[in-house]
Length: 353
Image (cartoon, rainbow, N blue to C red; front, side, top):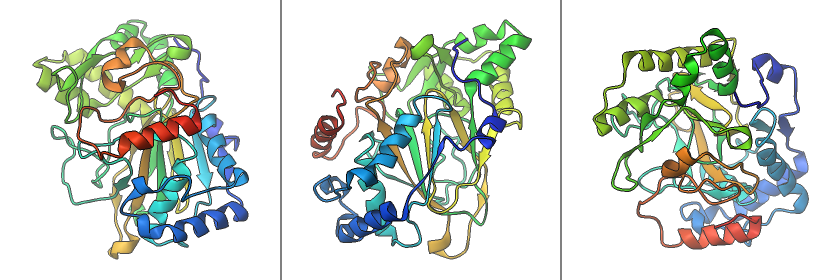
């Protein structure tokens, strides 16, 4: 079993090493830049470092934050990002602007969106084929996202519910295998994962174990919805005992023993390592006022500091070398300026194209 930090929820409760609080000076700088560039909010690819120039002191906490997710808990929480002080357009610009100092954004859906609104759009059931959970108010399966890290910037909280759930899959896997050593085979079994609407090598699914790799390459993935949909796409009947194992794993991931529950407040930024943590969200009830409804913005980023990945991650991430551009929805139509943005970001951050 990989020897990552074997943390459990009480470890996060007893430590604030994974929490960064923004200073008033940093916040004021972000507000000023967001307001000056608000007119570009519907054309974020036109916003680069020339338009959103953070001072070294203001950029530093964001660089520290993403770097910290590549060790220890695999999670970081930034508090104090401006929310109420900014309009929705200004908030969008602020999120994109600070993201320029952290990593390279990856497409998050078949439409090629690289900065995504996370809020309820009225969808009733996200578990359908190619369904997505971020635009519903449903409880989500534990899963990972297709980037080295996923960032959630909280602009508005729900009226009730909507807790963010984070678990350490390696701690759960270790616990299960100590009880039943045969579960190692269930972790290494090649499950069919749906690609969610795009294809790689003519297929809309890929085969991958939940746990693969050793040492620095060890990585974990799970998503019961995508596995069940992938089985349909692949024409595979998933054995009942393997499906039961997935549900047992998910139940443990949401249990007090392994699940860290976070109520994201306005101005919080949650950053999670997609290879060392799994995450979910509880169902929520929204406010009546449109501007008070739960609203977060999401980025998927690849990082210079990222780890190498096992070979089984190649179909979904495109590359497995450390510190490279990888992940996101691929083989889709993108804004013609996106590749120029990627090259510029890689040059600025030292990431291999």
